[in-house]
Image 1 (spheres, rainbow, N blue to C red):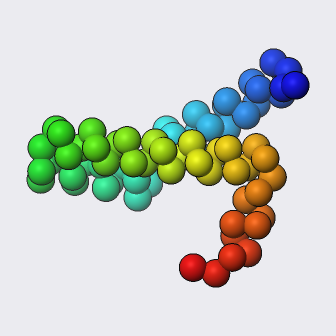
Image 2 (cartoon, helix red, strand yellow):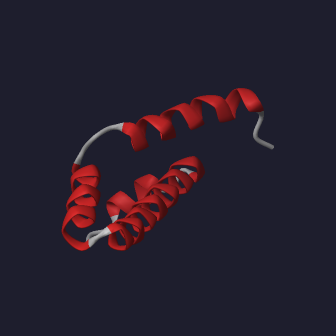
Image 3 (spheres, rainbow, N blue to C red):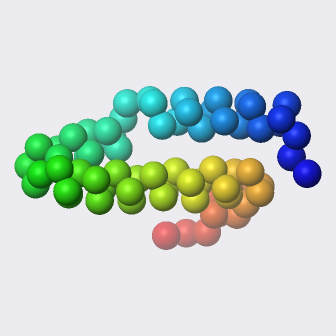
Length: 71
């Protein structure tokens, strides 16, 4: 079972991942400006699901396996 003392640093790192500007932010802004609010929300959903997938893999220790598999 995950304790609160383990969950707090994980949540802080996840928040840092989301708030850091980068290619995802540029993608979301460009889609929103060029194609409208609905396209921006759809893109945001995809980016958020990608972050959730990455965080779950990192929490389960599977990230090394995913990085080892060639595209």
